[in-house]
Amino acid sequence: MRRLVVDRSGTSAPATSSTVYELRSVAVPYGNCIEPANVKAGGHACPIRFQCAGCGFYRPDPSYLPAIDQHIISLKATREKARALDTDEFVVRNLTDQIDAFDRVRAKMREQLENLSSEQRLEIEHASAVLRKSRASRSPAVTPLSITAIGAHDRD
Ligand code: SF4
Image (cartoon, rainbow, N blue to C red; front, side, top):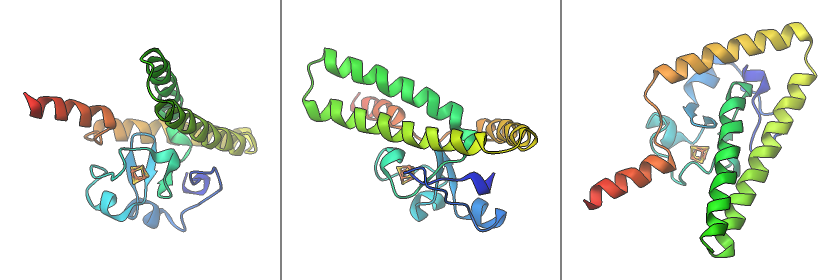
């Protein structure tokens, strides 16, 4: 899986070894993160509210494709709400830029998968399912939504 890691532009960014991949990155909602302070904090200290597709420390692999699919759907729904609320154009623009960036990353990873043999693709699908199961059993990283929820709770 480490060989199929890409960066935010979709450029191949394989980890040099499995150990490096595991020790220097942390799972966040839409991919792995290599930002040192966030890695140290177990993925709970993103300084820019998980806008990963615009971040130089973003390193997703194909096991995150379903999460990215879901996130793109969610960003599009939020953009529609923003338009309905007549928000300033910068709010809509930010959401559109994130959608486009995640879409680029997703397209590149799918392209990589298409270039594999069917046997290799099956192996990656199996490994992806195992990784997702393992991540789901750990405590989830804080996301922008949970930050909002914490903020609302603190005000009560
Ligand atoms: S935006 Fe994503 S990749 Fe960047 S520091 Fe935050 S969690 Fe890590």
